[in-house]
Image (cartoon, rainbow, N blue to C red; front, side, top):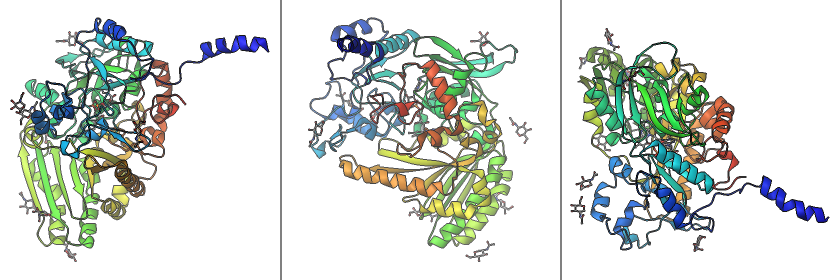
Length: 565
Ligand SMILES: Cc1cc2nc3c(=O)[nH]c(=O)nc-3n(C[C@H](O)[C@H](O)[C@H](O)COP(=O)(O)OP(=O)(O)OC[C@H]3O[C@@H](n4cnc5c(N)ncnc54)[C@H](O)[C@@H]3O)c2cc1C
Ligand SMILES: *[C@@H]1O[C@H](CO)[C@@H](O)[C@H](O)[C@H]1NC(C)=O
Ligand SMILES: *[C@@H]1O[C@H](CO)[C@@H](O)[C@H](O)[C@H]1NC(C)=O
Ligand SMILES: *[C@@H]1O[C@H](CO)[C@@H](O)[C@H](O)[C@H]1NC(C)=O
Ligand SMILES: *[C@@H]1O[C@H](CO)[C@@H](O)[C@H](O)[C@H]1NC(C)=O
Ligand SMILES: *[C@@H]1O[C@H](CO)[C@@H](O)[C@H](O)[C@H]1NC(C)=O
Ligand SMILES: *[C@@H]1O[C@H](CO)[C@@H](O)[C@H](O)[C@H]1NC(C)=O
Ligand SMILES: *[C@@H]1O[C@H](CO)[C@@H](O)[C@H](O)[C@H]1NC(C)=O
Ligand SMILES: *[C@@H]1O[C@H](CO)[C@@H](O)[C@H](O)[C@H]1NC(C)=O
């Protein structure tokens, strides 16, 4: 018996890694002197992120400017410049188990004191490989919860966490175009016209650089094009209106450079660390390593034709008729390399599509039968326009440099809708779309080239290769709503997903634009690639320092992602 007492503590020390991360506010949190030692190794002072809205409260940082915050709250580029900001401010908040919300609301008249919520309290403004290496070493040594953040666009809040330590990649802004790029380790001398973007480069910067070099680069499209070009977007898949022509982000990336959990600076491509390269292409952001740069294939620019359509529905029967016809046309459009964005609701249908390297006459010939159908069904009240553009850059500049898409409390749900459903069950798809409360967006960003890629050549969810549309819908709420109202909105998400499941049998969802409340996230986000992704993660991130909601390996952690199960 005596021996047991002697052995137990020893066994505990040897086997028992701490099961929870050390969080800010706990005794284990590093001392000021330890942070000072870290700071001495970095190129920049340590960051003390705050919710940007804190500028509107008396206790705020004195340099804060509430006028500025209010004026820019819906500006994606501005939000991405604030280390403490998420694009959807609900992710800056934290809901305690008892329903109390820690938040810093922009609306000061709510009378709620400003609190830190889910914004990390301290972090690193990384600008060099050694900044990232020092951060990883510090976080590992002190068992901290790490979050990697780029622009904060994440729809699952994966780039922030309460009481965590932030690694901010926003200022990795290098861009280099290379007309004769050869991936490291390649045996063949095949040269690519490629562009390498640093981890903090955003699409608007990448588009400007590609244009300056007379090239086209496939990327994300949103108001202000502020989504990151080398972070979560590509790591989760990366879709574009040009995907039916050129594939997804993961199909265009030639090489990554990364820092892994053991601090190594590696190149990952099909020749070097090819397993890691496979996982980085679609296996999810914040999971395998910190990306330092991504090198993309670029393409010859072509002229293109835009199609704009708007129709209001006066009866449910008209809605069903027009939306069924709309669903039907997609297989043909996808095969011809078209893509774009639509919104369907009981009230109406609108879309703007683009046909790269297709003349306006050919575009008209393709879409005119649908226009006629819709005109007849809506008694001549539908509107359509066909517009020619000289280039992607002209199209992008005229449509994406204005408008607002962020700054509201939002969560979303989604499904990848298979081509087979568009083709063989259009009426069923139409009724499901029309049944989603408050309408649904169809991102027409698959089919064509996306379907031609071998599903197993990248870690991406294979459901993408069979899909033609990515259907997403959102819920939103005014700030200051109690947790009970937020729960109701989340229930609406679950209900919408059930409705969509009927038209996406056996399919899945796009990890970057999906719900946190999936019943089977492993299958839904990664499909048959899950096991292999998990094995690659175990190889490159032995201590699991990279953990994100819904991500590969997250099932080993509790709901807070701070304690191992
Ligand atoms: C307004 C808006 C428009 C959008 N438009 C598109 C679109 O056109 N096409 C599309 O496919 N998606 C689109 N998205 C979704 C977008 O792809 C995701 O939000 C994606 O997660 C953004 O990545 P980020 O790096 O910019 O954002 P962040 O929120 O900063 O990061 C997202 C995730 O990636 C991880 N991450 C970021 N940088 C790194 C890095 N260097 N190394 C490792 N992990 C990293 C983070 O840890 C986090 O898990 C849009 C989102 C919004 C809000
Ligand atoms: C606050 O921001 C506004 C708008 O950007 C600017 O006009 C004003 O001068 C700023 N005020 C201070 C005190 O910096
Ligand atoms: C923020 O808003 C102000 C006022 O509209 C504007 O002058 C300023 O340029 C904006 N800042 C950024 C970074 O967009
Ligand atoms: C809810 O829990 C938080 C965190 O434990 C605590 O600070 C707060 O006082 C609690 N609120 C109520 C109303 O019990
Ligand atoms: C372009 O890539 C090639 C091959 O990888 C390399 O030798 C060359 O130095 C690069 N050029 C520039 C300008 O970086
Ligand atoms: C664009 O289309 C024309 C014919 O319509 C074709 O000759 C040309 O090769 C195409 N360009 C590209 C880059 O696909
Ligand atoms: C589009 O095609 C239809 C049918 O061929 C034709 O009647 C119409 O004039 C065309 N519209 C334009 C703008 O070319
Ligand atoms: C026009 O619409 C009516 C009903 O609104 C329908 O009966 C008819 O078949 C339609 N014609 C065409 C050519 O689609
Ligand atoms: C559709 O309805 C909206 C408002 O509900 C209106 O602004 C728009 O002009 C209508 N469009 C058409 C084509 O009738």
